[in-house]
Image (cartoon, rainbow, N blue to C red; front, side):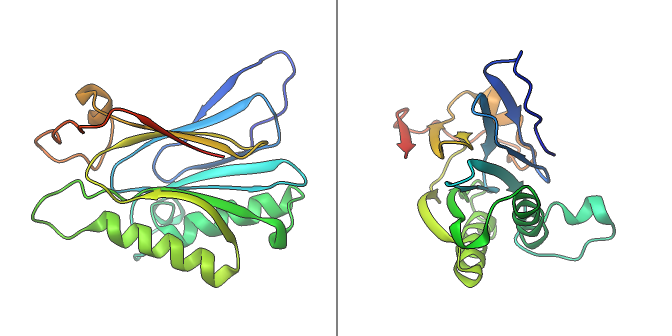
Length: 186
């Protein structure tokens, strides 16, 4: 999804859900998502001011169709990078910030850790510089990203209603995080 420059809508918020991505060069756009075990990669070219965010559910898997493939990290990363490049970004200038990968399910395999490891390895293999990350932990987080400036902010989610909007939430709500502070990466 490309967010168009529209001068009459200041402060545009774009919510990126599982399997989606968005890019923009509009300084009024802020992208946001809520993550549990999923990972979001916020990526930009600091020279052109073009940036974007993706949100993937699993690192790799077999997709039965185009829409199904969007759930997987490899496909989500390729979509984001290719759309940034088509819009004028240069691969050698791309920089990324990584969020998510929490352990949301006790007693099950740690999908969050697998997602985080995949994202870090993918970016390393592609030669894309990681300039910030907040991966792992035990709870959900809301991420906001301003693609033009590269500013990113994260807030730990303790509101059970907000956590319930995650598709990967366990049947019992996760216990509230002790620290309700925020983390801002520049």
